[in-house]
Length: 259
Image (cartoon, rainbow, N blue to C red; front, side, top):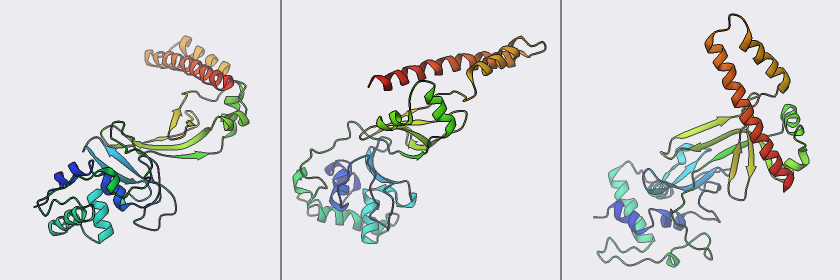
C-alpha cells in the first residue's frame, strides 16, 4: 500500500510533484497565476514550509486553493484529499505519472532530469534556504512622506531610481507558518527597497510633525507641574525612539545618495 511519506521522500518533499503538474516558468517564492481557476493577478507561489518539512502552495488571492502537492493533484483530478478512497487514488496517480514504480513493488531511482520541469536548464532548487511567501501593496508617496525624504536631500526621482516605494500593506508568515500583516500609517509610514527577488522593509517610527515642535511639546510635558511619572517615562521613551529613528533615516539617506 502506498504511503504519502514514501511519496514525499522520493519527490524532494513534494517539490517534484509541483514541477510535474504545474505548467509555466515559475520559481520557488515567486508569484504566478494559479492554474486551478481563472486567476487574473499573480498572487500564488510555491514555498518550503519549515513547520511541516514539505513544499506547499500558497494563494494570497484565494486561500481555499492553498495546500500541499496531494491537494494540487486532487484539485486537478477532481478528487478530495479528505476522503480516504480519493487520497489513495491520488497517491496512485502520482506514483504512475512520475514513474516512481512504488505500487508495483519495484521502485526506481528518479533523477530530476526525468521529471518534467518548468525550467530545464536551471539547477534543482533545494530547501536549504526556504523562502517565506510574502505580498505587498504599493501606494503613491503622500505629500508628508515626500517632505520627510526631502529634508535629507532625496528627491522622488532618486527614490524611483533606487526602487524605493511607499507601502500601504505587507503580508507574510512567521517561522512557525502563522500569517501576519504590517499596515502603514501617518505616524509610522512603511517603505520598501525592492531587489530582484525580495523586498526590504524600512519603517522609521517618526511622526511627520516638525522636529522642533515635537521636542518643545515633550519638554513642556517633562517639566510640567503635576505630570505623572508614567507621562514622563512615555515622553523620554519617545525621545530616545525618535533619536534612533533619525539616526537610521540619516544613514539610509546617506546610503542612497552615495550610490
